[in-house]
Amino acid sequence: MDEDLEVSSMEMYAVLFCYTRRAPKANSQRGAWMKVLKYSRSHARAGREISPRGAAFAAVLAILAWTAITASAQAQAAKRTVIRAGRVLNVRTGELRSNQAIVIEDDKISQIAPSGEVKAAAGDATIDLPDATVLPGLIDMHTHLTFELSSLSYEGLKISTAREALHGARNARRTLEAGFTTVRNLGAKDYADIALRDAINDSDVIGPRIVASGPAMGITGGHCDENLLPPAFHFQGGGVADGMEAVQHKVREIIKYGADVIKICATGGVLSKGDDPNASQYTLEEMKAIVADAHRLGRRVAAHAHGAEGVRWASEAGVDSIEHGHLMDDAAIATLKKNGTYLVPTLFLGEYMEKNLDRSDVPEYSKQKMRDVIAAMRKNTGKAFAAGVKVAFGTDAAVYPHGLNAGEFHVYVQLGMTPLAAIQTATVNASDLLGPKFAVGSLEPGKFADVIAVDGDPTKDVTILEHVKFVMKGGAVYKNDYAKH
Image 1: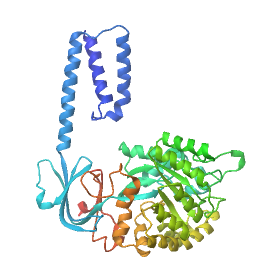
Image 2 (image 1 turned 90 degrees about the vertical axis):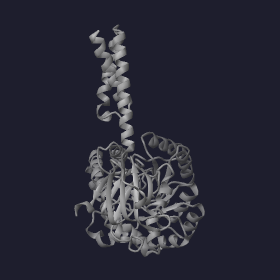
Image 3 (image 1 turned 90 degrees about the horizontal axis):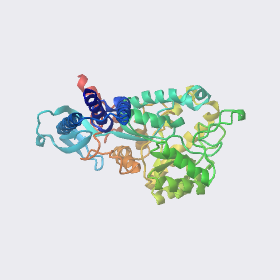
């Protein structure tokens, strides 16, 4: 009987750990307790029945445990964090409201009101930012967290996927501390960005919320293939697919392995060997097939495209965003405008490379392509801004060091945007491009408590965003320089 009681108690405890999401240490111990369940079930199958006393004890244990878990959940729900801010920026309107309180419950915003209307409650955690301007966490729609510039050349052939994932952990932290609480990672080898996303979600490492693409799709020998190895290796990039049937299969495969978004290469690129940024790669029909499958399966599509024809074709195929667009012409700009396709310009890399190209890790075979693209990018993107093309913020971080992402803002202002419009590209516009299931991009009840703070007024000087002093993601504080004083 005692043995039956021990087995029944152990089995009930295992059930609680394996199937109760709020059970403490559930993630780390779930595997071990699954073994307990397996043992106890096999033990029962061997002929040992749980006695009535043992069954009663197990039932009592279950009730007590469930009561404790429910009480714990209620206690957690009741606890609030209140940010009392000197100024809060409404990124939709540009209004700066003084002396505001942001009330956070769990990982979401529950209320924003004048500070005097939010009374302190027992158990509140209060964060005082009386001299700061508070705004939503920023969103970068084009990063490569697992890459360094050196990994895009022959040096990259020596780097394992595991090492790239560890690079990603370091770069993710730098990006978050720079104020970017959400990123869209567009391209990584062997699904390293998806592993990084999951590690961040499980609190194994620190970083932004990641919307990950896995390997970028491209044609054989194109920008998203691996073109540095000789023929004897018969090696190709993980996202390579040619022809209608193959591209449909590849979309499904990438989604199967966890992609949140599909990245395709519609034209050649700058840092790839043997291709031309002006030249189209996927055909219009192939891209239509990719978009149809991705959208049917609930994923949006981002298309790397420099040249004009590739930009037009990708937009007509129905992609959700064009990445770069640096060599587009007036007809391509008009197509983006007509179709409502977002442009993600990635412009700060041009300014950075103008100063650092000759001493950078850009391979020799790419340096002239880089110079040609830099010469055209500002003019063509400025035309797109003037034409009213929708713009979402993106950097191509990895081409320059991670953590410098906010340098993108001042380039947009130089090309004619107001500071507020530039901020909107990294908040409400980026959120719109991500889609409604991602509750980010503004400080409103029901949205994730992704909050940053800076000195001064970024609607007057957008370079202030290059010096973020406070970062909260999902209600947890990851940086607070104000607390150091």
